[in-house]
Length: 253
Length: 134
Length: 113
Image 1: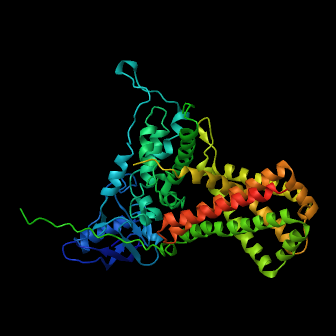
Image 2: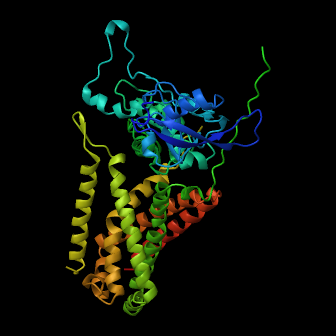
Image 3: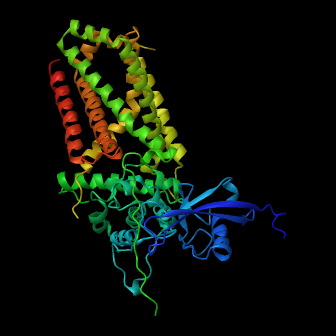
């Protein structure tokens, strides 16, 4: 076999298992997987499922860090399994589902809360000035694109929710980094005029005001979206709004 | 058709009082947060000093003498350390809250943070000069 | 869901955090010098009293104490929450009361100059 010459090694995986039909609580199961040197953790899991234990459940799709499906905890850190290389983990790799989410089965989490939160912030263009088809497309300069481009890169992988302590401490009431960043992405878009509507959701106590700028969300984001920066900008904008609303209602916003 | 699969999601608990021990990143966050205790305590000390200043020369000079107690010196050193940590952590994340876009480029974080440090150094020197220290 | 009123305290926290980041280290150095027996000129009774008697002195002393207290109070409230203390309303009332009383005290003391 050529595997040895390519620097294969036997990797120990400690994987959290949970079968809702038979288990009262999650438990850990240890596997030994022969890995090639260039493999990512997802490759190891796929080998495991194909050859060792077909009952293991986990989400994955693109294998190239664009779909956001394979988010899981690797040695306590939220990571995309297709982005983490086996060679960077010298010892046992502990694999668990993303924290702060209920566990459906094995490494599959219940993502309903996340999905609902994305919907709440109205993540679509609410045009400031509606244009008819005859008027042509909405035009935008590169400079206007720069204002929100970073925040449009989110792949909805939920790593930031696993990293955010406030999401856990508020028992999932906090609307969370990705949802607020998504709202900010549209607020910053020059074609959009829906900021007031989104403020009703994100300028609330469960919105941006639960954030205490831990910054872990930006640390773990695999697409460098920097949600922490979006949230602080929302706080500043919301504070200015509040003062304008309460003290200077005669000033046009 | 087989039997209906039963769902029983398992809720993961977040340990309320000890979650920050899990990662060094969280410990650094908590260290940053507790700087407010020392900065707040120091400000209350300044308030006492202000009171003594308003009461008269004898009372104010008693306050200055009280500052010389070992406990006060120790507090100052600890408070200075925490205060500096607050300064560093604040300046280092300030660029995230204040993106400065010129044309199609956003200024790098390091530029905005450096500007904060420069202003801080200048301001501190000005105050030390005003106080007669330098 | 109603829009929050947190901006009131967050605004003072942001201003206070900024001010303390810039000012507190050098202030601590000044009083630390006094604490080691080398009282800076400006901290002597005559000069400091003169400074506090002027409008600029009053304004700057008040702003420093006001923002430092409110900034620290809000962060302390969050810190309690992060340490697992669930009684947020109680904590908020306590910290903001201290900040409020401290601010009033500062104003009162300054008015005596």
